[in-house]
Image (cartoon, rainbow over all chains, first blue to last red; front, side, top):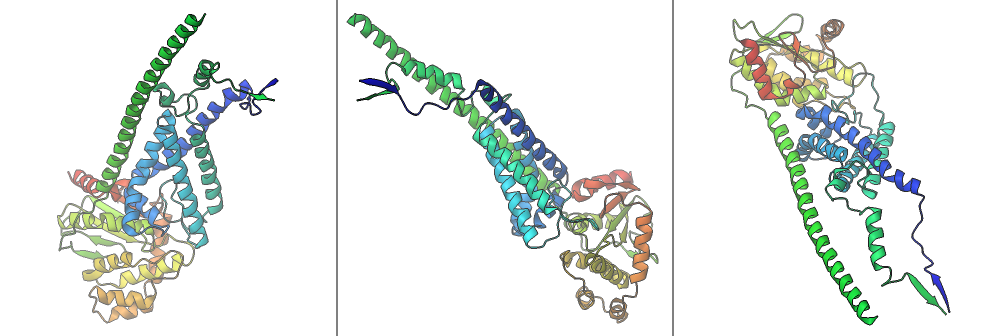
Length: 196
Length: 250
């Protein structure tokens, strides 16, 4: 009779990686938040033009475009602030990722239809000044990059320096919690099997 | 030996139960905090949303409008007799979407303030676009607006903004420009010829060049100046615009 340990051991990560990963989330949070807050701030002073920027995409019916134009800047700012402080991190990450996905789709669709618009991403949008060409490709690359960062935040919240951790809201328990439980249960459910 | 094992099991169960209770309490606390933060965040978005909608709430335009004078250089004055100040300069392009936004949001407030004798409004229709089709669209509309008699000028101006074409296509075609004139009550037979021949196209472009060369426009159209000072976002917020004009009149 030979005792062997389970053939699927928990993935072993170097302590260095364990230290670094939460900081990656923190950086991702701050980058996504920075973009959202700047974008929202530049639009929030002028609801009429914000509505105009949404209408320029010709994707939403009038009433909906108005509602989105009024609501989007404040939504961007609130979600951005949540990400900065790390509150409701996963939810804020989901909203950011969805926003970025919507922007990518909107810009791609404007590009495909040959609309000649400023994305309106950073306020003022709607129309381009004379001689200006829309840079749809780079706008899509940028927004998709931010989408990936937001997806990272959703995958590994809340990172370091997050109120979620301080308030016990962190969706994943810290590794040492899990270690505690494992120790308690170790003698009752030994992670071994008989091979004979 | 067996007794100790039982004691150990008992202690272990108690610890386990205690941990379970702690965990449940933690869970409830967590849910409460989560819900509170979520409610606050949603309320903040809702409040901002409501505020934005209020900010862009338009006034109802009064039936009357202040007398209009089309000046020889192409600027158009809208003011009650004797009202000299404050002056509200509006530089706009009939093809510019943001100008259309300004008109739909704050146009009624501007008219009302003029009727109330609170302000002297000076419209400066110009062409800011440099590429086609927007440039020629804008020139055709700007030239046509000069053909409108002063009695119908404002109505025609509003009609042009309402009918603004997409920036990617040729629009403001002369047959349309003529029929929109009839729609707003222009009966003068000279109007049609004036629009069709684009009588004022050169004069309109000359005035646009003069305005652009003067560097009064810093950030594109619309540019709204109150007493020579740029209003920026305030121009797009009817109640703030009204307050700014009333303050300037003091």
